Length: 202
DNA sequence: AGCACGATGCTCT
DNA sequence: GAGCATCGTGCTT
Image (tube, rainbow, N blue to C red; front, top):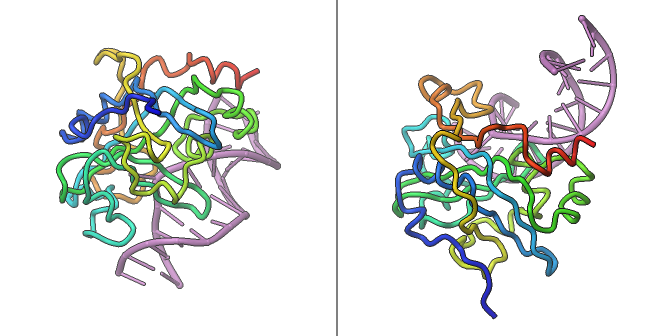
C-alpha cells in the first residue's frame, strides 16, 4: 500500500530561502482518522541559523529546538502562546539549525472536514492550519519525506517568482534589527482570491 | 475595517 | 518568572 509522492530530502537540503519560496504552491497532506486532508501552501517564513535573532536557535541548541539541528525534511512542531502548535519543515544540512514555518494553506482535499474542524473559519495562519489538520506535538520530528507518519508535502502548483510577495516576518516585534525587518516572509499573490477563503466569507 | 486585549501553558533564564 | 514565530472577540470608527 503505497500512496502519496513526498518531496525528497534533497528538496529541503538547500538554502532555506530557496526552500521557503519553492514550498509555495506545494501540497501539504495529512492523514487524520483515516481521512486524507490537504491544502496548497500559500505562505511561508524562513528561520536561518543561530545568527538569526528571530530564530529559536539564536541561543544555541535546547531540548525544544533540537529537531532543527537534525536532518532536513523533518517536521519541527512547537507549542506557543499557551494553546497553539506551529509546523515547520527543517532545512539545510544536519547540524545547521534552520527551518521554514508553514504559515497558511488553501484547503483542496477534505475541505468539509477541515471546515468543520475550523468551525467554518479560514486556514490562513500557522496555528489555524495546525488546528485544521490535527497537527500537534505527536508529529514533532517526523520525516516529511515519508508517508508513514501521515504528514508530508508533495509537488503541487507551479508558482513563478513574479507571483511571490515578500516582506518582514510576523510577530518579531521585540527582535533586533536587521532580523526584525528582513524580508523572509513569502506569500503567493494575489493574497485574496483563494477558493476556501471565499467560502469562509459567506 | 481596524485595533486592543485576554486566553493559557510550556520553555528557558 | 518572563516571554512567546497567535487567535478570536469585542469595541471603536
